[in-house]
Image (cartoon, rainbow, N blue to C red; front, side):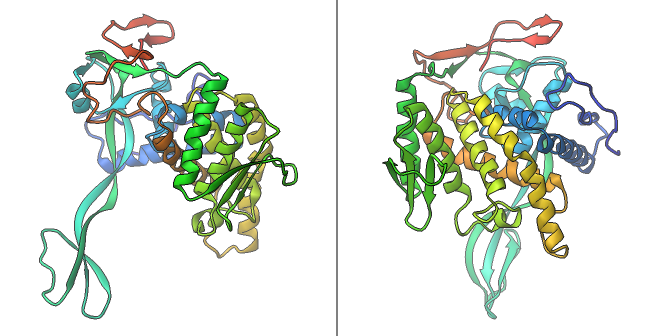
Length: 387
């Protein structure tokens, strides 16, 4: 089945992108489903790389669903919007919801994400020194030295999931973020400082200024500087930005250089670092949208120009050949770096996924809950209290 060419109107967060129709049809093959998902994702990224507002929509969703990859966040958003409902907030498979005491409502259609197919293999060193992989069930040569057993990605598949708004049952207690305040910002500053130390960087608050920058990352001396002339909220934003550089733009970042994001191509590197900062702060309830949005606007054309310049200089190199390639790389890198930071700072909420150990979440003073209230049908679609 070829992906449909029908387009949605302005009701979607990404303007006009292909509908992801046919994903739930029984006769859809896994290959066809992946083709539909991939085409839809490419269309979303094509839109996002040309519009800072649309890029920010993706980052907003990633702040809520930060345990998901950027590509799957985009796919979840477009499918929820296609159904005319609210944005996804907490997503799990059918059986996973059952394990948490909730049931998918009758008539609800699954949302689809792209998940890896994996296989267990054993890696061995052959007598001639080469390394080879064999399926676990297959005997290895007797003269080979067994190294380790590991899981490897062998392909991709569509995985069906449902948002909390599509379920009913046992209430889920959801931690709520604190109102932004100086105390909240100080708490996040301490958490981000821990991230810096974890990655081997010394944090220094300094009155020195490097050009027009309010912060500076020195990879040679493993040091981050943040200006002392700013208030605590501004220092937190700058530190989150510099941690974006720490996570992405070190001297061993071969992928970034391939896509034009490195110390030699600051435009795209700044888009990535600021996108990480925006998403991290948003996940912690700190919204600096206008400032970050303008910053991204200033660099948006740089994303495209970097790709064009690199390709024109060496048309036979492995540089990306489309804006979608650039957008896919940037989004994947940003969401991966964001997840690495948020796994340490632990913002309130679930990050879009339910952990198997959270079957009986503890009640906290700042907890909210989802369900079991009935859905309220309105002209804008179903509404439900939830995370």
